[in-house]
Amino acid sequence: MSGPAGKGAVAFYLGIDAGGTQCRARLADPSGAVLGHGVTGPANTGLGLEALVDTLLGATRAAFAEAGVPFDAAAQASAGIGIAGLSRSGALAWLEAAPWPFARIAFASDAVIANIGAHGGEDGATLILGTGSVALLSVAGITRTIGGYGFPISDEGSGAALGLSAMRHALRALDGRTVKTPLSAAITERFDHDPVRAIAWMDEAAPRDYAAFAPLVMDYAEANDAIARSIVENAAGHIERFIETIFEAGAPRCALAGGLAPRMRPWLRERTLRLLSEPSGDALDGALRLAGLTMP
Image 1 (cartoon, rainbow, N blue to C red):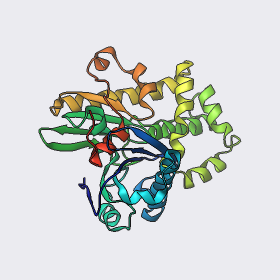
Image 2: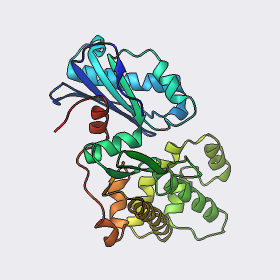
Image 3: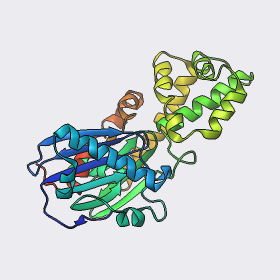
């Protein structure tokens, strides 16, 4: 995590949450009043750093436009930006050296801003379930992560992992190695039930493309499709182990975050749910705090 650095007076605070599926921006004034929001497409370091900067600035422009504030006022803004994949070698140094229009700027991972937002900057942990998955803990001034090593080797319990499991099942069902279910038929229908087309898709697919199947997997699991249920139950097991590890590491509380979290909660055991805390804010609140905004 890098601290705020910059060159001028601050009249605005900008928080950005740059994730594998979308990039969200929130513009606030020094009192914390929200002025505008902006949303663009996927934004992580795996896209390439120049493309990432374009996406970040696109979300920024949209937030300023919604607020009715000219974009050149970005020179009076302090920005806090949380980015998926920031730990990639050289990424932070490159971003810090890039020409930004802001008065001040600070970078952190998307997990860090989610955790800051969830616990108001206090000790705690956040398990993020989105395109990927990662847990971040902050205890007594020490921050560490659990998981988050990247798809497909990691990201257990995530949208991308659900999609990958669904694709595996669908292809096995297509050639008769396992039973066909409504889920497998719905997946292979996307490729006209042709494994050659499915393979061509996989050659180009990014984690967000696999994650696009996650809502379908959840829908069929909730409709009692046997394979969909087994995929989701397996994901729930990974999530519960994440949570157990978080508390074993000394976190005083844990919140769930990310787009998949609300749909996975009903699949967790009651004893696990009792361990969870409701987040006091979201990742954009955390990004605004990273930018230096004092929030109640």
